[in-house]
Length: 123
Image 1: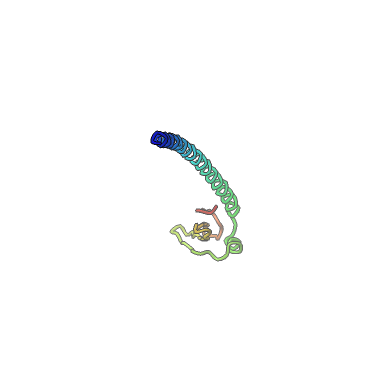
Image 2: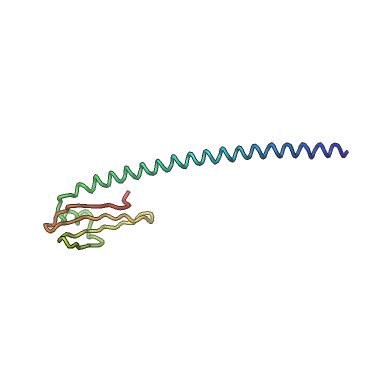
């Protein structure tokens, strides 16, 4: 009876050890797959942000050399107006979406024409 018990313990030990090796390999493979997916998803997000940023710049560049009155019609009253020493001013429009603040600045010269813009976090 004792020999049978010893054989059972030995068999259990061997099977447990083999299953541990299998689990280690499974975890290694799982981690490699997860790391690969994570790297590719980061590239996808970066490329989508770059596309949206380029589209935003293209849309805002249409406002160059337009009067400030047109800007106010489309965007409304600015959230903030910043005055500079060069007799220009900035109209700042801030929008928040999913806790991300989008800020658009339009530079307006003394003749009330839009001469520049900048955009931050608007994608």
